[in-house]
Amino acid sequence: MSPAVAAHRLAPLVQERERVLAAFLEREQERIARVCHDMARAFARGGVLVPYGSGPAASDAAHDDLAAGRDRAEVAAA
Image (cartoon, rainbow, N blue to C red; front, side, top):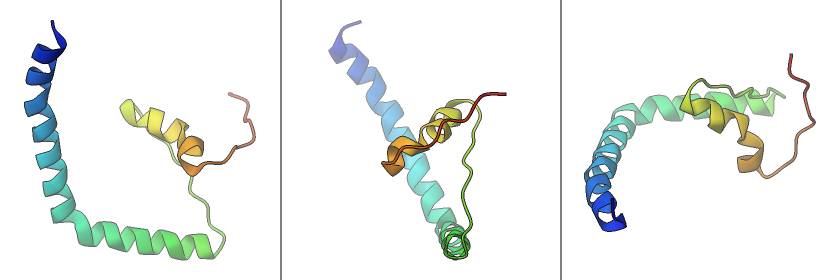
């Protein structure tokens, strides 16, 4: 498959993803804001966030140190 054909097939999928995400954020914006506020209060009291995930989300959770821009101490796998 040529890159042009691949891009042509991919474009509607990306547009649908964007539509679904925009609808979700519109619908859930107040709840997301409340959760962010609650997290900020918890962090101010010394709380920590322990990210985790399964499936595709596991990669995001495993690499939060890259997004945060800081190194973490190694933890041995059980």
